[in-house]
Length: 360
Figure 1: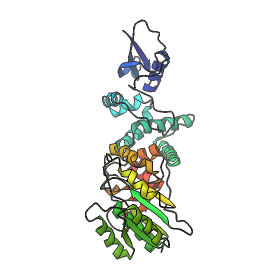
Figure 2: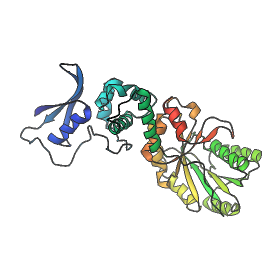
Figure 3: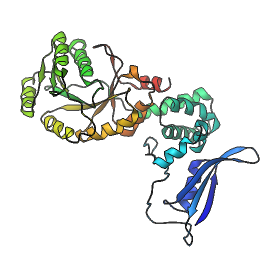
Figure 4: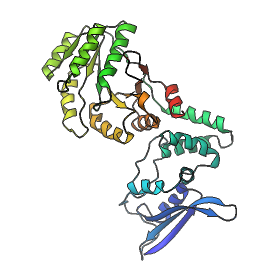
């Protein structure tokens, strides 16, 4: 076995050399920042193992996933392999920024966004894209920040409030894991449509399992003078949809289940197939670890998720997961909830609020 070293100004360029000269399935032994003399400029060195008797360039299909470059699509975040993630943790934030190919004048914004939970690969790709587009127009920190905000705003999708359907009820189902506040969120939305918009509203619960779930919803219904019904089976749900066909909007509250329950979405599909003009909103809590978001999305994606609602923003410590997840899934944001008060603590998702959150 032979050892070959590759050196470049940044990790991206060094890895590109490895791909061109060794191939996609190169065995990377080490990657480290190094200083060049003179000037003490920082570069990146990648050490690769080569089998004796093999040519430098490989053409076969990759067999491993040691370290991969992110997809060139600006907002299509790549999955990190465990080895790559471990490798990155060995460096300081500034060193990681340099590994991703960033310049010194970009480090302040990079550190701010990464510190607030925005994925560092995503930040680096946005900054590199901005630098490339304004190569001949260097600017100070404030102008760079403004350019970055403009790029993020163009990528983020906000759907606005729920739109009604003429001549038929809009059916809106909230799905998501346990504890994210689906029932309280439905009460806030129902109050908004009933009182602020003066629409005919009905509430249907599919949660016949959680103790007190229907009682909580019925209490809200009594206060708001909105009918609340429990659908214990698919036939009940079909009958209730027909009964409330005179309403402008019907909200459907679903039970929360573990993402490991593979049968749950199959049950919901049977109910949802009966409803016309339905929107499915996935509710995720900012108080939840971001690492679970993808598991929840995989659980409910087969339903055809139309919108994202992020709840408990008042309990979130970092807000980068809002940006990471919405760009990763490309599903429009619909609402944020910011507390327990009904109906006050809910707002229509907008780009300016998200920008303020991720920039502190």
